[in-house]
Image (tube, rainbow over all chains, first blue to last red; front, side, top):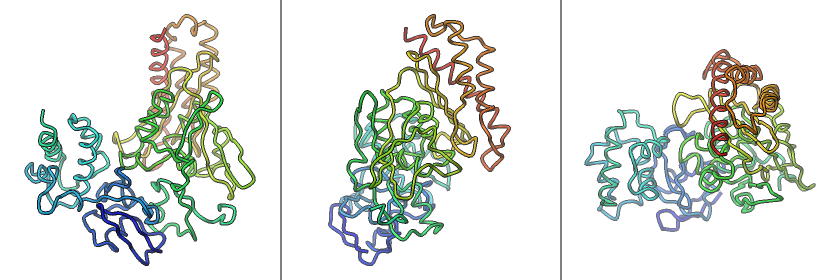
Length: 156
Length: 275
């Protein structure tokens, strides 16, 4: 089947997509957008977090065809050219990246949190990131990074 | 469309369906994308109750309806993660009909009704008659879940769930409670502790009897410890749990008795304080 949707503000078309393919597969395999990671394929890990019509979702749980005509935003769309998004910068500076596999999902989920709650508490951060799993280490540096990004994006 | 393609698989939020597809456990000949049906994501009042489209997400139930249906909103907050709550729907929970579905105990406690639609029209099935077996419900193959009907809370409601984390867990067991002071009625719902979600009718009649006999609805007085303990025991007795990877049958019974007693005390104290 053919899927046409807007991805990161640009119209995109994927041809010859299997009807059962997930949005994640379409992004990675048909649209050359490998930033969203494929890990659990069951919505457990959050590595494939993207926006669908402005809502944070796991791309692995969206049927490709469900994105037809919709707006998708991925981690690739956060930076402006070479300038990283403040969330991405904060993750780098806080050392919230170890192997980096989970990072795109965490970055998108953090972006969503800070859009809705500019000054989250640590409890709110843990709640908002509960669907994202990091298997390298603990979450302390990640939480530091979210606070740092919040400070930069919404100064007190 | 469902009548013409009875083997087409309806998909809404995809949080259950896509797992089956991704793991190649199921390869349906066709999909029906329910997210294109705008009416399914609408809700509104209907004759004093709420008619909530099957496609309303958990996030929206929490954001838009927590004041009117607090029990279901509490249960919704325990569903998955933000990503899952942004997609998952009560309609999908009912369609999957898992004994562990988080919405089910709250729907049972509130005596909700499921609206099924087909080309032949619509029919409404009480949720207490909807679950007919493990992951089986009362739907015919030509039907789709259109909505559920639920009364705005008539009194305090509670929901408890046992799991290994605060997020992303399938319930080890869960319990929902709804007090209806005007009707002097108590509703219960048990999840993950029987082949289907179930109620605890004996526990309901027992505690209703205690509240009536001692005039406690009027007095708003505390309930005797012995009655609370018995209520917990009767809830546990209504379950038919098994040993599985998430917990043992004995643990589930024990936890249900604790959750039932605590939930009742929380709800009853709220009722007493609301005087």
